[in-house]
Length: 244
Image (cartoon, rainbow, N blue to C red; front, side):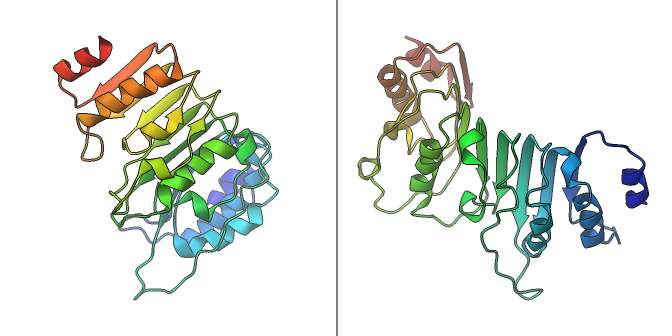
């Protein structure tokens, strides 16, 4: 049925969410994904929730994403007792001339993907793993360094790292970024954003009241003119101190 619908929908862009798993569904996930892949030139704004053993299917879209503007990817690891699979570098999205917005969710680490980094203006990553990754802070800074046009960036929640010292990381000055979303304060001392005008800070176990001080330092160091501040979960007293 999906093949018929897609074949009769002309050449207009496709905006869709594909979830490989639906409870109480007998759908052929691989067959449905293959049907969408046939029309990959029409993909425009896409959200893909795939098991790790399905990513090999995406190789067929490489070089056929001329309309893709945004993609959200969630990789769900299949239990080893069900299937053993190795996820290698996924370069299906490397050639997408209009792609500017990327969001990775869950186990979809950016190290697993090749994107046209030089053209991205928004990159967000939502971590779900609880195991500390000693290389993760460096990889986040690396994204800022290779995405010169980036305007929106998220520092996601991630576990504390034993003996972590931000002074051992490079300091990154990014002149085009204007919207920062902070869910972990660890990297704030490493950053300077002269064009920053919007900042969102979530209160959780990885930010805490100390993050207010780090934000103050970031603002002062950047010399930016903030117009939008969002503090989720912080007491009014702490926010007032920042505004002073």
